[in-house]
Image 1 (tube, rainbow, N blue to C red):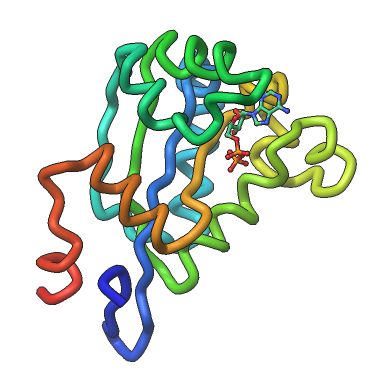
Image 2: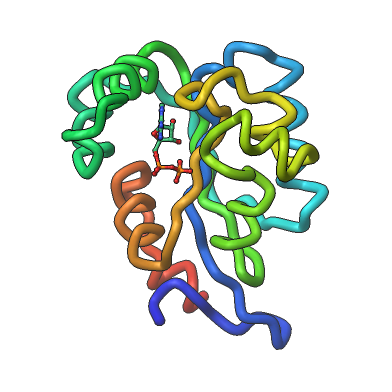
Length: 157
Ligand code: ADP
């Protein structure tokens, strides 16, 4: 698989993680989420602060076009700065998603109160973080945020 490599006998997997505008707007929350990455032994492969145009937001979330929250989501994701990371570690995709917690903040608070969404999420839309949900989406989303990044090159060197 293109997004894994053996290094020191560990299979590293890449994922795309995003700290959304609601969390970036609060420096202490941003710092707490960044610390989570470090505490959980992710390698920060790339990091980028950016602001989306509305059209970026629409393209990224096109799969949700028919959902009732689409307009709200698109507006929110282009409302201010966010931070994107390419992260690497064993099982990076599922590990990051576990740290995030469930999509819906009330559910996160109820079922997994130590997760990032439970601790810092504001609403089901303003829920602090994004993480790829499969190796296919990681590949697509890394290319979306970091078009200059070559996973192949990184994995082989
Ligand atoms: P996840 O981000 O957990 O992978 P989805 O891919 O289903 O979840 O949804 C993408 C984003 O759309 C969510 O992170 C959240 O910001 C927003 N969203 C999803 N479901 C809802 C909902 N029921 N109400 C409001 N916003 C939602």
